[in-house]
Length: 213
Image (cartoon, rainbow, N blue to C red; front, top):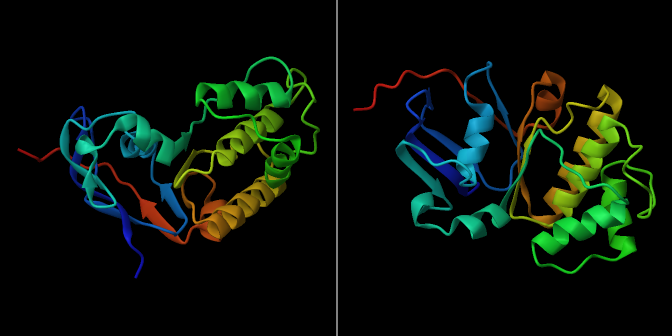
């Protein structure tokens, strides 16, 4: 039986979004689904401490999130948001900027190309980002975050700018890499085909009334 990575009890955010009690297993790819307004993106931000619950308890590997260092948590539980943020300049420049922010040494060009390949991005590290398409920028953003090798990689609509074929290849590559490296993937996606194909665990959120005293 897989260990419990996250566990939530009577969880609410601003008393507007509430969740049924839930568990997310470690080591399995979890896809989070549900209607608009059910709190899919909010849940990811609660899981890595970007947002704080206004009610209930949230546990990471058995530890109450309120007792954990949030900066350390966000490095372990890394969230790749829907909004892609890149700097002007080359692919290498972008890796350098993100790594400098984390006070880490820039990886070699060989390592950069490995993560570009995983994300189906056929560019050299000195290629400019200024002329990239939206889908290419999304894949570069994914490659940078994947290269940080977190314990948990959370993806919020990671293939929204990609066609179906590319989306499938990118997700297959990312999940294969993460499984080999012991990284748990949690993804929010509106793509039912992706969810059905890659979701080892599917967490379906529903709108829950706040009945907590």
